Amino acid sequence: MKNTINNFVVAIMLLVSFSSSATDGVNLKVENQYDLIVDIQKTEYGSELSLLNQNAEVIFRDQLDEDARFSKKFNFDSLDHGEYLLVLDKKYCKSTTVITKVKDQIKIDHANYKFAFKPCFKIVDDQVVVYMPNLSESKLSVEVFDKNGVKVGNFQTRETELRKAFDFSEVDSGKYTFIIETSEDSFEQTIEIG
Image (tube, rainbow, N blue to C red):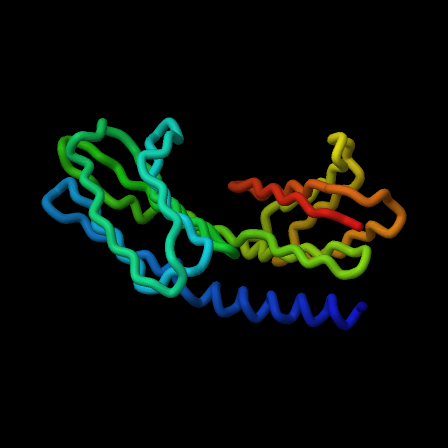
């Protein structure tokens, strides 16, 4: 089992090292002062693109096809002035770009661009292995709750990566919820044990 866990961690580390050298794949361009052109050359299965207003209300959301090109024009002419978030949510990462509309024109706010890796989970026998890069070395915490909402485990780190195996051999079968929080994001994953 230790070899399986080690192989999983090595595979994820290779994936992360490849991902960290790549971009999110989103090309943005402003046309005619209030049109945002979004172009993604190659999409991944399960990826979702969303445009949210400053109240986190969804203006646009679309599931992207696998291995396809995605291109869309967003017209901000009829939208209120303020900040909008363009979010690309992939399997292993999430990127957020801020678009600001002021005086009938839009601007891409490159300074507030955010990119975050998402946690990866692998179940091996009675162990749940969690891996997540933490390149900023900020506080990263994991809490585990049973089906009744009772906390059954927790872990914190400031290391460059979260790599932790949680042992479920002494607990009842059922659903357990992992909540992973970073300084900027929160991720929740429910895992079935047994």
